[in-house]
Each structure stands twice: as structure tokens, then as C-alpha cells.
Image 1 (cartoon, rainbow, N blue to C red):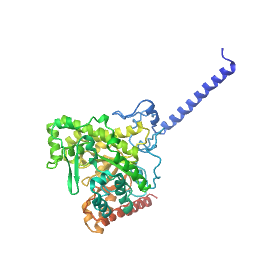
Image 2 (cartoon, helix red, strand yellow):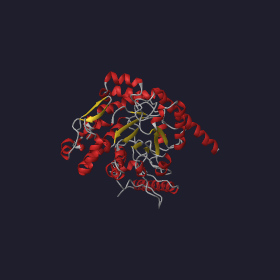
Image 3 (cartoon, rainbow, N blue to C red):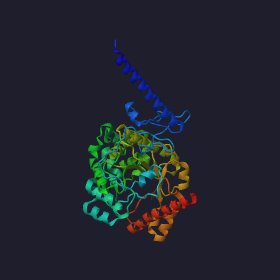
Image 4 (spheres, one colour):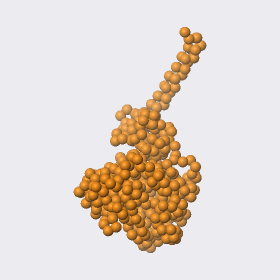
Length: 462
């Protein structure tokens, strides 16, 4: 027999537990009654969930009849858009020893939060149009700049120091993954990069591609990941750092781009002749991209972008077979991979260049932002992507015009996109012939026009 006091103590504990469970249930029900869906991310790890599959993660508390929640955001309290919110039990940031971020305008826009002005940065903003870039690149050679973390960090920071851009994008190249795929590549200033051992047959695929599951991405690309941390410290919180990768389809085209043969033409012929071999390349590239992007966030990247620079050479049907599925998987697998490591997913952008015909496919994806090329109508993009932040799509040709024209075209672009859920950028990239001063005019006008439009909206609503 147990002594009476011990029995009373056990009974008291049992009653106390029941009361606590009742309180938790009432709070959860109250939240569900308000239309919120709650997902306990910490519990997913305990249950062994380390991947967001096609069915997506279910909410643990859900108002009857409501739609299933989807994990597709970045802030620990804003993974789900609209009124739906996520409670993140144990997420952590990649590192706690970097300088505090002082300018989070880009990240707020990416998450769909209200912004006082439109954030702005430009593809290839660390590039040959800047005299300070050329002085370093010409003294060291481009391959050394790519491969030396300290130099890459210095080049990354240059546009922040000159223009105060709202984002820094790591100075690197989408082709750094080629050696990991077994492809040796060469790059010389003024000459398009090419593969020394370009793939042309299924036999080449078998003998070239690695066993991707056994690839140590930190061993292979440690110099890139080291440059991420160095850059974060050099930025000193002035802007968030974007890490990026080429998309599987674009990487495939470069595996087939020889010194005297065109990879775009070769890749289209290859998928026609050898679709199964092409799929093997794409699956390998996708797995490596996922590993690479997760490692970049672990190293300090605060946002990610996937560039499918050559998606536009595919027909709509080909795009949906050879590009789109892999793009969608990347966002899902990167975010679930970060969650499995206890790291907050960062915002992700996809740039399917030349594929305005398929933008609607990204509305239900795990990307937060979609970057638009110059040929996409912002109004039509908004219709197809109502819950996404849009990025783009200034026509670089206007940089060759006078200041008045640049300001007019820039202001018109801001009017078309609006000031919320929008990140200003080019439809493609800065060219080496562009004037640094006129790029400065573009950046300045983005800020002036967006502030002016925001003030106008505020006055009309008050």
C-alpha cells in the first residue's frame, strides 16, 4: 500500500495535468475560431518529418472546413501568408555572431510585409561596369576573384558602398557547381564560359556525374561558403546577403557547352534524343543545388535566389517537363531541409527567365518571390501571382538614355508594380557598358518614386 499523503500528491499532479491540457486546448480552439491555423514546427522533427512532401504538412490545430496550411514563408511567425500563422517552437538562425541587420527592407518586402519604400538591387550589381570592380578583377584575374573568399567579399560589398543597395548578392557564378557535377570549366574575360569535357552522349552522363548522395558540398565549395561569412561581416548589417544558384536546366545547358559548340542548341537536341539521360542530369543537379543552398544559409546567407537563365529556350511544354518540376522541388526541399536542421527558412526567389507563360505555376510553390524578365506585364503577373512578391523588371536599354528618360521609365515602372510586395530590379542584369552614374540615377529614382507613391496612397486613405 502507498501512504495516504503520497496518493494525494499523485492525485493532485493528475488533476493539475488535466487542467493544463484543458487550458491549452481552449487556447488552441480560440485561435482556430479566429481563423488562424497553427503549425508546431518543433513537433515535426519529433515526429520524424524532415521533408515537405507533395501533400504538404498538415496543421496541428485547424478550424473545421478550413484549407490545409502550407509552409511557404520565412519569418518564424509568418511562414503562412494572410491570417494563417505558424508558431515556430525551436527554429534558430544560421549564425548568431554576425553584425545585427540594420536594413531589413528587402526581407520585409519578400515576406509580404508593409514597406515604407521599394527595396532595390540589381542582378550582376557587383560587375564590370564599376571601375572599382575592374581594378581588382584585372589585377587578379576572374577565376582568382571567384575562388578567393576575401576578394569575392570585397567585390560583393562594392555596390552597397557606392549606392546603398538594399541587398548584396554574393560575387560568385552559377557555374561553380559544374566541377561538383564532374565538369571542368574555363572562364576568360570577354569569352563565354565553356566545359572542357562537355557532355554529348548518355555514356558521358554515366562516366561524368558523381554519386550525389555522397558529395560533401562543404568540401567541394568551401571557398564559396567561406566568402559568405566574410561578406556578412564586411556588410556590417547594411544590407542582407543573397546567396544564389543556377537552376538544374541552366546547369544542364552548360554541361553541354563546349569551346566550339553551343550548349543551348546541344541541350535541346539532347533532350530530344536522350530524355532519360537528361533527366538523370537534372535530378543530380537538383540534389546538388538543394545541398548548396542549404549550406549557404548555414554559412550566413539571408535570402536565396534560383536563376533559370536559359529556361526561355524551352517551349512551354518542355519547360513544364525539364525545368518547372525541379524548380518547385528546390524551394520545398531547401526549406524542409533547413527546418530539419532547426534553422529558420529564409525567403526564396525564382527567376524563370523567358517563361512568362507559366508564372501561375509558382503561385502554389514554396517560393516567396518571383523575378520577372523584361517581357512580362506586371499587371498580368499580379493576377497570376497574387500571394507572391514580384521582382523586376526594368529594361536595361534605358540606362543608355539621358537622366530624364531614366527617371521617367523608372517612375512608370514603380507605378505599374505598386510599392508593396515589390522589389525593384532589372529584367535581366547590369551590362559592362552601363554607366555607374546612370545606375545611380535608377536607384535614386526608385526610392523617390516609391516614397512619393506611398505618401499619395496614405493621403488618399486618410
